[in-house]
Image (tube, rainbow, N blue to C red; front, side, top):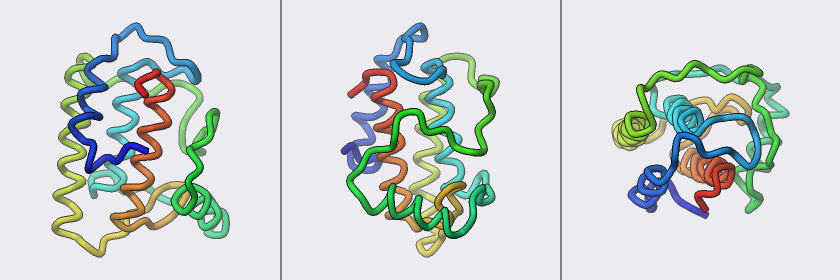
Length: 152
């Protein structure tokens, strides 16, 4: 498994290999949509975009156990309940700018937890996650989307 802290430079380097016309092997995101989607989920954990829980507490606990506390990868075809059917509008001018945007959000993730060691921001389908749990989630989430675009 990739690790968003230990493998940060490798992760960002792999993203620079993406061509804007690369077709996903599953899903409908473009490469830039995928990068911006990853940045948005990092914002849930870095204090910038707090989000509510979209499932029951019982369901969140089951999801947390299945995703965080097993070696299982995130399932292909899973659609988070807060995602719409249509893609979000792009917010960056191009892929390079989107990668820089993601890089900054990851840096802010590090800074946030360095200043708020006990923080437990809400993940929308797993509830409150501490730093280590967020590392596991983001690592699995990045791997999921890297597989989507054959970056692994």
